[in-house]
Image (cartoon, rainbow, N blue to C red):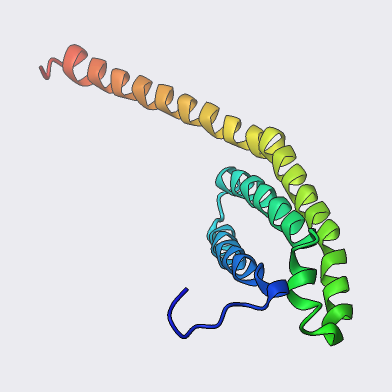
Length: 145
């Protein structure tokens, strides 16, 4: 602790830890928000889900957010209770998005990717056949080579 800096009140010592976690979560959310590739997004969402579950559990502990806010500012208890109650709903929403992303990646998106690969292979074979025809016709049959 720096000289002259006050130590947090006994009940508020978890506040710096929670604030640091909020900073890390904001960074993770910015990365999620900037990711448009579903194949990259779903793993990021899984990581976020894991981190959020641990973070929420810490906030809900006896020495968590309630202890950091409640004793010093009891007039904020209703807001605190509403935010804590939202944790389960947020995790459920995240689980739903991850599940739908997984379904797309293993279903219709995977099918489109597979179809594109098959089409690319067909096009490559077609172009190779045209090149072979051109080579045979120009160089072998006409005697250009």
